[in-house]
Image (cartoon, rainbow, N blue to C red; front, side):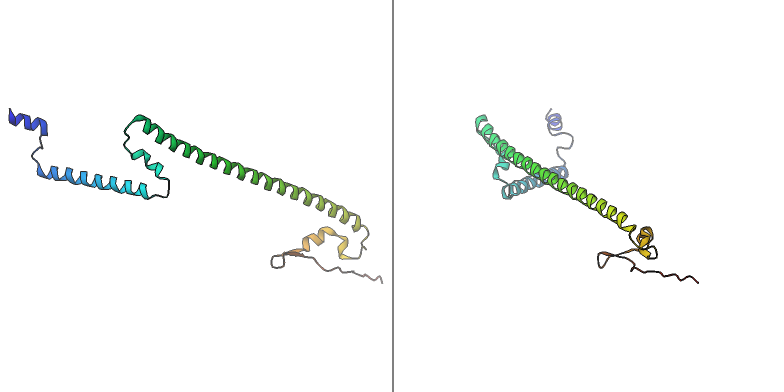
Length: 162
């Protein structure tokens, strides 16, 4: 009966010393790891209130108070994050409005310059290379170093009839 009891209580491997040693090593490793985690949580730069989850409480009221404080702190962090998001969104919106205004202003200036060119083109002499604006646009080159367009010099082509 005792032999059967030992097998049932301890299992088939109750007398296996290697298995017992393996269990002891695992338990020791788990305890060490738990202690490392507790130490890391205590030393973290976060409030020690985050460590509240690992505490053992004397009463339910104490646990409720501790967790309520933690909840309030998390809600405060959430409110701060939401405020930051709203600030970033409003800043983005202002930049977007500014960019759109700049685009509109540049489009108006472009239209003004285009209309001026159209008016002035008829006043340019026919024997000047500037009388053909499309040809001037094709011959113009953007200079990266200087940050400006290199436009061909005006040339008047005199043709003499025999």
